[in-house]
Image 1: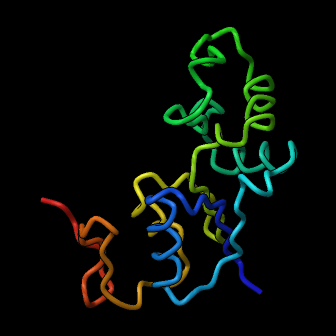
Image 2: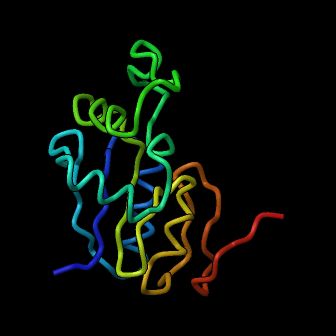
Length: 143
C-alpha cells in the first residue's frame, strides 16, 4: 500500500515526468487517471483545501473549455468553479500529488520533490532532456 497518490493524465508530459520522479524515489504511487475516474466533489474540495490554494489556481485553461465557458469572469464563485471542474474534468489542472508531506499541483514537475518522503535514487532528466536530479540524487539547480 502506498502513501502517495497522483491525479494523472498520461497524455501530459508534466504529469508523466512527475510520475517518473515519484518512481525514481523508490515509491509506486496510486495512479488515478482523473479523466477516466474524476474525483467527486468532496475529494476535489479536499484536495484544494489541503493544497491551500485558491480554486482558480487549480483551473486549467490550455486545451479546455475554459474560454468558451467564460471562466475568467470573476462572477463565478468557488463552488461554481468546482461544479465546472466536476462537469469537465479536463479543467482540473494536473498533476496533483498527495503524500504524507502534503499535497501540491506539481507544475513545474520538480515541485513534487518538495513533498516526496524518500530521496531520489538516481539521476533524472525530464522527457525534454532537462536535468532535474544528479547522479547523487540531488536536485539540479538552474543557473
